[in-house]
Image (cartoon, rainbow, N blue to C red):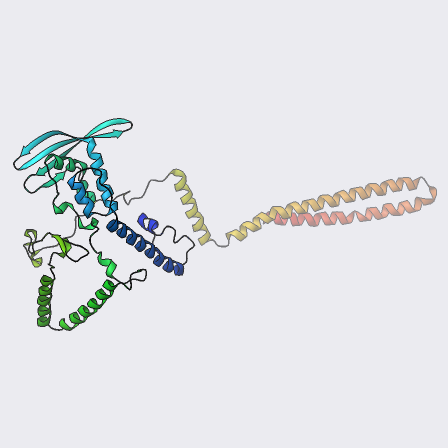
Amino acid sequence: MSTTQRSEGMNAFFDGFINSTTTLQQFVIQYDNALKVKAQKELEANFASLNTTVACGSQSLIERQFQVEYTHEKFEEVQNEFRSRMNCFIKDTVKESIFNIYTIKEECMWEGKCVPKYYHVQFDPVLKEITCSCLLFEFRGIICRHSLLVLGQEDVHNVPSKYVLRRWSKNIRRKHTLIRAAYSSLQHDPKMQRYQTLCKQFYNLAEAACESECASDQLEKDLKCLAKKFGLSSSLKNNIVSEGGQLRYENVVPENPSYNTCRSSDVLVRSPVAVKRKGRPRTNRLKSTVESRCKKKSKATKKNSSTTPSQPNVRALNVSFPIIIISTNIVIFCYMLVMRVTLCTQVTTTCNVAQNPQDMEYASQTVQISQLSEVAPNGFMSLLSAVHNTFENI
């Protein structure tokens, strides 16, 4: 699954239908549900545009023209331009050849202050064509407030058809609404069923005619004759068709435009010019001293671990040597302490016994035994000293 960060519109489309815990199976189901909701909203908007009317805010005939043609949502945007026209004023007019060039001043609020902005509008009195330096029509497909002010000054009551775009019209049948879909609620619509039946017949004719060149040419001629019979032309994209199936107006595009006089075989297609990439260039970034040292340390550690794998065992053994030595010293100290306490006890006992004449013989025997017991500590101390020296040599 690809990320949706590049298109936030996708997040808005699936908002309320999926979340981070949605499985792939649930996503397929919720995808159809999202399409159903969007299609239902479009049907409701089309019904409202065809059966209701948004009131005009002025007595302008141009506004009424857009009221009849456009959907409610787009007509409200046009009305916003009509309302903003009151903030525009004509400051200068210059006539160049056949064009009238107007300088329009618009008062705008910026940080609580009134800041003027100036635009230039060019008007052709013969063709009734108009262009503005703000380029709102080229960007959003709506005539700007500056052009509306100039059209009112030139007493233009209806704009040319090129300024009434087909994509905003409410009087056309969208082509995608004739295609059967799982989320569509109009699968039993008679118009959709007729469309499906005709498409099957056209597909069968196309499969039979494509076997030979003569049959293909003959079918193409017959289709052109049928198109003329039903009032269609090659410039169908520029036609606006009403619900009754009649053409309301038509802009014919020449079949051989002037900019396409050369053949496709004579055109040499070259690679596009390389441009500078956006963002940081692909170079090694500057690193701090701490970061470079840490990186060197990590590399050295990895290198040592790969070359000397037995080193950790040696370190563990070296660490265990002081522990053994310390424990040995503790044992020796405790043994010596016990022996001193024993000797002191024996001496005290001997002195006390010596005061009684009857026990002199027993005391002498005890002293002899204690003298003999001193040999063991000396032998044990020599053994521990030897062990200690051995560990130190290692």
